[in-house]
Length: 119
Picture 1 (tube, rainbow, N blue to C red):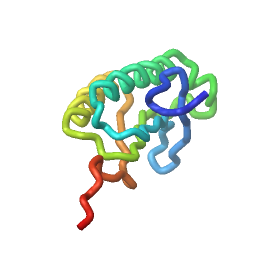
Picture 2 (cartoon, rainbow, N blue to C red):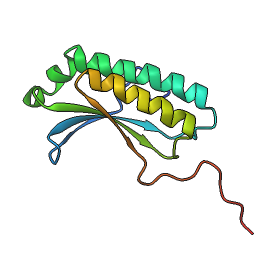
Picture 3 (tube, rainbow, N blue to C red):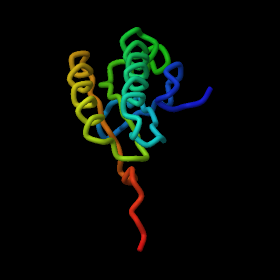
């Protein structure tokens, strides 16, 4: 199945972060954020799936050696989220934190949404 925030049926990637001693449930957003309402709905569905996976015991079952580890949900983006999406993500982090996890947005190689006009 295809990975990405548009496909809520797939857990994109799980990795153990030895530096932070936590399991990272990673999702990828390759699209730009111009259709922010659509991306926000995709994120809601994807994060709901990730929370069900983590809190429903499937994560512990798949990674029994790390069942006591902290958990983070990590969004890896190709494009920087716009202000509306960032506000949504901040609120989402508050919800995720209530479940004992955290949300991390990783845009280290992100590009601006709008290409710069070349002269």
